[in-house]
Amino acid sequence: MSLVPVEEARSRILDGIEPITSTETVTLAQAIGRQLAADLKAGRSQPPFPASAMDGYAVRAADVTTVPTKLTVIGEAPAGHGFSGTVEKGEAVRIFTGAPVPSGADTIVIQENTERLDDRTVRIDQTVSQGTYVRPEGLDFATGDTVLHAGQILDAGRITVAAAMNCPELVVKRQPRVAILATGDELVPPGSTPGMDQIIASNGFGVRAIAEADGAAVTDLGIAADRQDIIEAAIDRALEIKADILITLGGASVGKHDLVQKALVARGMKLDFWRIAMRPGKPLMYGELGALHVLGLPGNPVSSLVCSHLFLRPLIARLSGVAEHDPHSNAVLGSDVAANDQRQDYLRAKLARNADGTLVATPFERQDSSMTRIFAESDCLIIRPPHAKAASSGDACRIVLLRAPA
Ligand SMILES: Nc1nc2c(c(=O)[nH]1)N[C@H]1C(S)=C(S)[C@@H](COP(=O)(O)OP(=O)(O)OC[C@H]3O[C@@H](n4cnc5c(N)ncnc54)[C@H](O)[C@@H]3O)O[C@H]1N2
Ligand code: MOO
Image 1: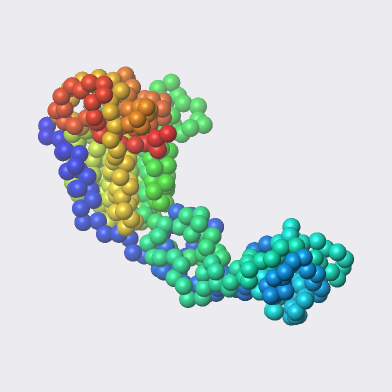
Image 2 (image 1 turned 45 degrees about the horizontal axis):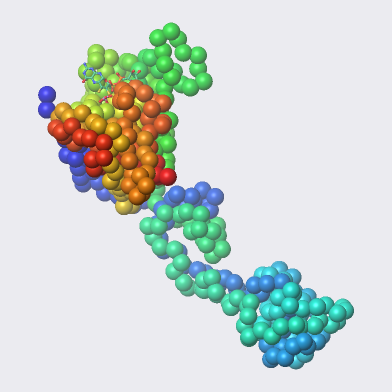
């Protein structure tokens, strides 16, 4: 049986994919992780007036060149309530952080460098240069500035500046829509009481987490029993919701109940490839059903998750039109590994650092692709290329990072 090499599978999935161009409007509260569709120009300046950066007194710098000196306090300017008069020679206004600096004043003396003598008098104990602690109008951004740019992913900082620009809603790219369908009579959702021959469906939650972290909108199509008509109905649902990607979990192998491919082909999918030279993940399938990209992931949980890291993430990035996150890194082996066969191996491993900072990847002894616990404990996958010779502890290796190394 000829198996498609990993790199070829990747390019067959990704080749010719055009990024989504349609847009939608979301509120600031919904904007995290979304991709801005157009440049965002400031329609106002921030601060909109010269503002005090400190609690203290607004003064004329020329009045405080020799200290100590006494000034007459003519009023107060808390934030949100500017002082409407003008500060004349020998006068000061009690001011608070964020308040507009009154006309006539050009400098703030912080209150620590003053002594309030009575209601009307303040003593200034330190000289300050003109403009100290005054934030000029537009210091943060000014009307007409292009502050955010099309294509940027909205994070906490960008959402905050958009809010400051008085944009309650933002035009963003539509998210790639991912539908996830688990298959198998043996599966029941978490929280159920499984029958004697049943297990809990787990893969979908991990695949969903991977897709959502990369900005996709996920629909859970539930668990389809091992019946072609039921699987076909779920495929129709993916088409109805106009999913960009359908992920099927399980039923991809050669068993007589592995009906997923049959159901997809019956619904009109053009199969691109099935079975790749990879461990875990050999039964991976890819095809297209109209505009729907179908990734058939193997049922074993680790296989589903490893395939999601290697194939689903780049597919979502391509549809989103963003640069693909490259999870590869260099490390050295923390233990000896055996020679490899024709399938590229992705060994679940723990990461540590040598005294010189080099990453050390030590594979787990058991590499069964059903073992969710070992996958949860894994920091990376060690890549063992096809036909790699046996390698020793300390030899260089390539890894796929599953989490940022400590
Ligand atoms: N004769 C052969 N048997 C198998 C081969 C093969 O080449 N020849 N390949 C093996 C490999 S490798 C894998 S991986 C599995 C994948 O098989 P399927 O994709 O058809 O998956 P299922 O048989 O449906 O399930 C496999 C395993 O995973 C469990 N499973 C399925 N879905 C879920 C889920 N959503 N959550 C948790 N666990 C799930 C399922 O109960 C099975 O235990 O086939 C090998 N066999
Ligand atoms: O290759 Mo299967 O994906 O080991 O478990």
